[in-house]
Image (cartoon, rainbow, N blue to C red):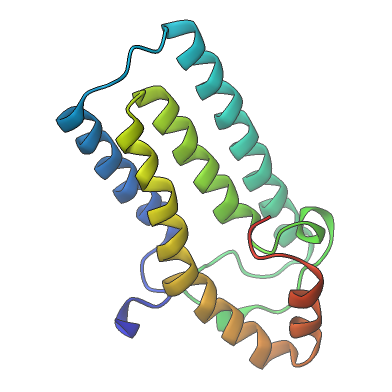
Length: 153
């Protein structure tokens, strides 16, 4: 299983989970949520997720460090400003929020299962390897940051 660590780009993981959510929603069918409610919830969650993700990207770019999630060992700076004061993984949190938006659009309760599956996968195969690399790169500074800021929210 460690062969998957930091190997699959997170947007691809989200796309695969989203596809599974769609397939599950087709197999089990949607609920009778009205279109305006579905649309409103979807748009609100999508905008929230985009805002969270882009805030993370902005801080990474300001710090002039890598955005490549498959090579966490190439980070040149530890970012703890902006949205990183509230969550250690804003881009992944944003993706999870996009998946919530997708589940709202699909209007199938079974589709909600995709969100915790995404979170579990990301914790094990993306975030844990990143945290090991950042601890190695930044010594005691990163564990102190971990103690102050939650992984997700």
